[in-house]
Image 1 (cartoon, rainbow, N blue to C red):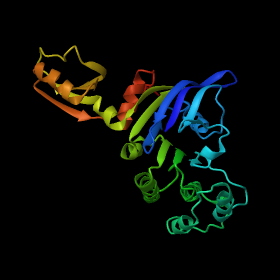
Image 2 (image 1 turned 90 degrees about the horizontal axis):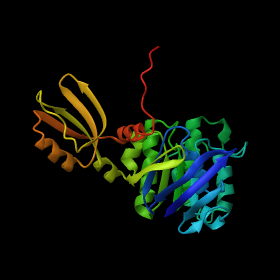
Image 3 (image 1 turned 90 degrees about the vertical axis):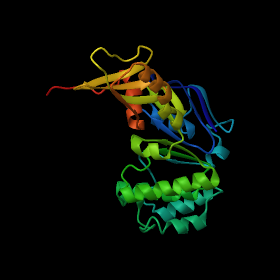
Image 4 (image 1 turned 135 degrees about the vertical axis):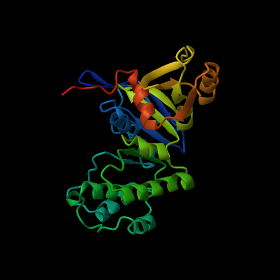
Length: 297
């Protein structure tokens, strides 16, 4: 389990993280989302022991991460911008990693060469961004990590390779109980793989729930009322728009509870639609001054 408590980090007086809390259950896939500059990459660099916090704690299996070589040998981190030694190919880095990581799996390295079908002797710096990401996954998955930390992991990969990479990751989750923490702006993709979601804004966690609970707790309602009808006052409306006679509401609450209240208000017609993770992200952050603005050009 990854436990982050009251994590604070200042850069030249600016609070990149401000008493942030988050919990990643063991064996789960956790999606960390937030607007640009929210602090996502900074959180990941603390969890992987690159940064030392100014205050608060970062624990994995109850142990502090910073300067803990045993914990670091059990995790793999793929940052947004991958970096390797200037002249090194994948095979050179394989030899280097196999000396540092006791769980490095040479057999898996050879098997994955069938998936990542490019020469492992080509210097990584000469590869395209997509191929560099493939090289990073090739090496990271051979570490047999207990904890896999990913920052924009499939950015630059084509659709087929994205699916291939996620297939390998989810196979490790199912077979080995690997814990995956992934930060990404591709919310549609996260929706397919995540068990838990944390939304952060301005260095703080504003929401953290299982994906199922999150999607069960906010709904989109399309409804038509007679001229004298109106929405029940007890409903917590997050957003409202209207097109002709059809009103669309984003309402916080369980679908079953919302439906009971709507039935009692005698609408002509209504329909309750589950929200996507992307829609939940937008409406949750709407309360944090993060609305899409209409700009006249």
